[in-house]
Image 1 (spheres, rainbow, N blue to C red):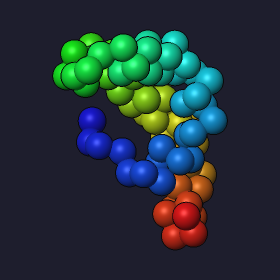
Image 2 (tube, helix red, strand yellow; image 1 turned 180 degrees about the vertical axis):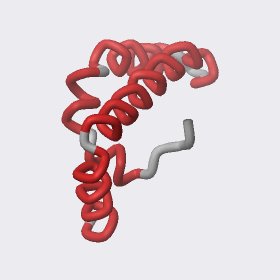
Image 3 (cartoon, rainbow, N blue to C red; image 1 turned 45 degrees about the vertical axis):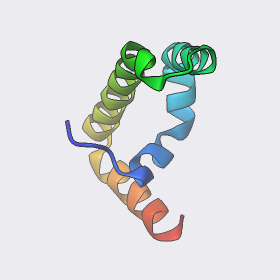
Image 4 (cartoon, helix red, strand yellow; image 1 turned 90 degrees about the horizontal axis):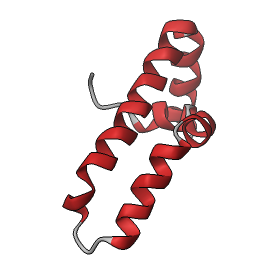
Length: 77
């Protein structure tokens, strides 16, 4: 899957924080405890996978609405 645009992630922000909270917590914990971020690759992959799955779900269930909302965020910030 292609790298999501910032506006796509902004459009999903609430859902990312709720649906991917375990993956985010594991990644944050690893980053806080490790001096080298490269040691958190597995946690990053899990968080990235969760975010990509959520993005795919949003696009599958409401493609037009999601695109319009993300585009609006892209224009207005």
